[in-house]
Image (tube, rainbow, N blue to C red; front, top):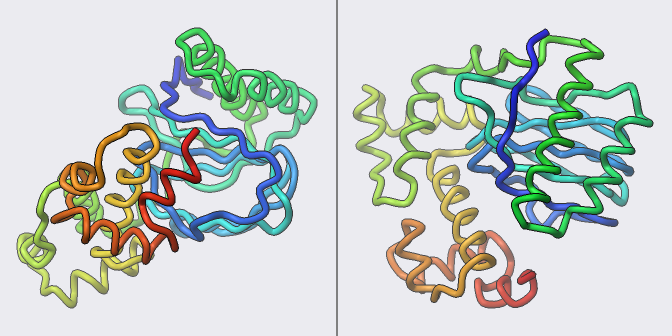
Length: 258
């Protein structure tokens, strides 16, 4: 079975004793994986849903919504990463058998979880690859093909790629529907059936995700962040953000700043 040469990690977060997710559903700009150390997680991504525990990995493709719920207090590593060009994964859960090896990798990952220098990044990429290679060696099922994506509505896949590419610009979804030779109603129904949410909600989720990152990673004003994330102004961003996150952007920045 083919093995990856490398991955590029864009985010690594270790969650210790998480009892509840702030959002029931989220989307990520890169491939993401939840690496469960302890506890039980319920998930739903594309056409697969289930639960996962110690030793399980759950993969989510970029731009695809993932539902998640803590069924018990969770300890887990979360990664956003890029694959080598033309490589693919399968969305959903995989289970690793060699738990001693897995927990050893998790122990080292915890040691470097809060370090952001280049050396620690390389170490974490090596450890994440080790988990992938372990699964490939154990050979439970084909790991490098996203089969579920092949069965998706290809017209909607085209729409998803367009929305992701232009999310921070002014998008007219009715014009996008027209370009696909669909009415607005047909487009919304097919998009919701394929992706699990309406196109407007999908677009908003991408913009809110970017706004959250900007709030935590920069000192930009709300108005500047709003314009860079596709919102008309800071007032509108604040209103949408508060509706989605149950708190204002300022409060989110204050309580989550690291």
